[in-house]
Length: 460
Image 1 (cartoon, helix red, strand yellow):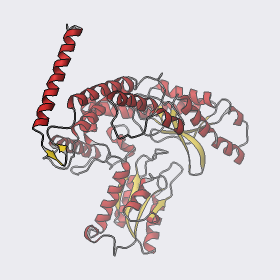
Image 2 (cartoon, helix red, strand yellow; image 1 turned 180 degrees about the horizontal axis):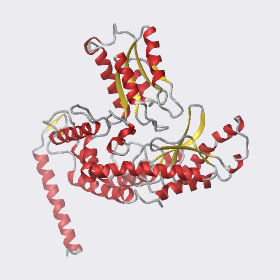
Image 3 (cartoon, one colour; image 1 turned 90 degrees about the vertical axis):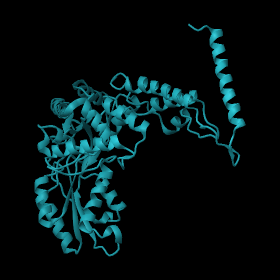
Image 4 (cartoon, one colour; image 1 turned 30 degrees about the horizontal axis):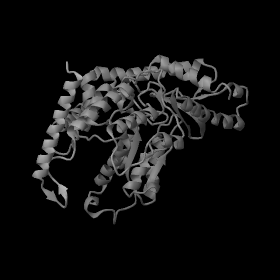
């Protein structure tokens, strides 16, 4: 053991050593424009200590609490209040590490806990410990996967994952890339389709091109219009095809739109189908759409950012036939290595089984009403509070029901008990949308969701 006096002597010795090093650097200093160039300007030991302390906070406040349902989903504060709680100002001099660690604590405290088992708001899959470690590694190594020279391991990992995914699709050969999300993937697909239609665009640009037209469903992701805008195609040249009552593209309506575009003198070049729409979870009839694309020589892109995971499941892969999953390769690879193909398949099957359980519970409970029978893991429903249950089905009823979901959402946010999304769709008033995806979610969480809605809306 080291007593206080010995510890002080060691500390003094270290300080003297540092002073000697600094004195030596000053004696041999190389100055350029008044700047000393000797040695690094960062204190690596202090930096390492900061990372160590920050990782401890991350472990205790995020990872260890990720599956704790007694924790709040969010500590909601109004924007002006939150600005006062957080020190957001950037100053001329840097802050102490202690202050920075406190800021880390504050950021975690007031952020929405998307890893929480009762965060149902968007398409989040909860915490996956293996892909989280993979993200830590990639952030620490800071690779750029563009050549084998600078990123040999990650390039080989990407190739291995793409090869395995091609097997799941059922192709004998193929290629692909991993993107940060579905929006970028859709834009890349649109760019590929345009290049296939007119290869000269790469050198000559947009001048001299005919009016290009693409087709997608009314229920498609908003990124289709955004991609058309970014690529110079124009949002007016995105033709939206009617969908049926389940949100699926109607093939006959697609063919009508293609014929209409041709009569107008436009140049149809692309059809964007969807495998798992974000709201209703609908899968477009890919086989029939593919036949139309073949007939009119159109590029077919399938946006499967949400529904593509069904490929992993032998039970549910019938939902789609020719798509690709858009997630970063190393995270996916490490998770796949840890869980195995069987483990990934079990996650998909369990999520869809939980969705089916929730549907059956909704049917049993008074006041809950399904929007439609779900095809995937998207469960859309209304909650009709007691005060509205005896009203006639008419404009006044639907107008009042339209206000229920926003009020319930506000109350759950301020309480911090859970987060659940809602929206109107295709003329239907606001409804709740529960998407079952996280492996942390249990049957008990499904029961809690319905109980909490009833509790929060009891006086409406």
